[in-house]
Length: 331
Image 1 (cartoon, one colour):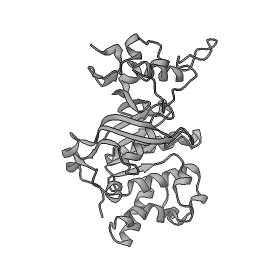
Image 2 (cartoon, rainbow, N blue to C red; image 1 turned 60 degrees about the horizontal axis):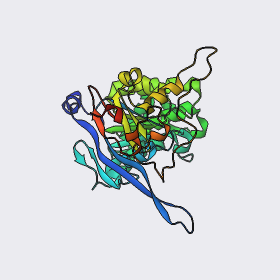
Image 3 (cartoon, rainbow, N blue to C red; image 1 turned 90 degrees about the horizontal axis):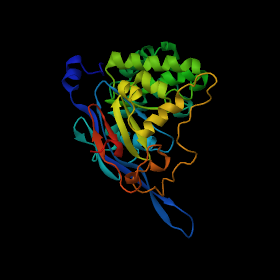
């Protein structure tokens, strides 16, 4: 039973985006209190992205910027309020959850809470195969044992329970479960943040190894910019529901264009001895996402703010590589 596409199939699709988002938005109605009614909160605001086969797209931004909401829409757990999502040039609007999960699988932050404590490792990994009725029971067990070896676990773990494993071992099980159906794209939502520092590098190297071996495609969501720089080919930066900059990983980290990206990178740079901690110039107040400022939503925190920023929202500008949404680059 071979669940993986041949090399010829992979190369034939490599020039097309495996997933594309076209002006995708998601709005929630938030209760303001008994006498104040509800107001809209636009968690994701007209995001357009392309993810090509075999690449890793890093998605970064502060908490509350819309990364997790975007991931939930890609997984089919939320439907977009506006816009369209395509997988291999097919719109997923009419797909049910079962169809989406055959193409997209997640690796969550906390491997213990994402695994059923009452199911063995073998049962957890084989569950997607059972749900999608792939192969016979004997074939499924063989496939699960192969996946265990692929993620660096011995086959004897098949009958173990999550509470008998370490955090790193549980995350390897979660990775095996995500990959057993050979998904078109894997959503990695903070895949190492709940692990000990000593284990994080092992899991990151495993993800990179599996990507190269199996031709996988990742959307990597992380607060850890070092992790994003280590794994990603391209990086998209989100702020209050919008992608404000997108570029090749090396160029974004060496030549950030948007003031928000510059501030993010500055906030993680280690200061020289005696110079104190670097000031990211982001201020102490995060804008209220229910009552966004006019114009560019970043202008109250921007160190390069201009008069036009306070009244007019910038449009995306394509540059020599990537794009940026900032008045500094408007012509």
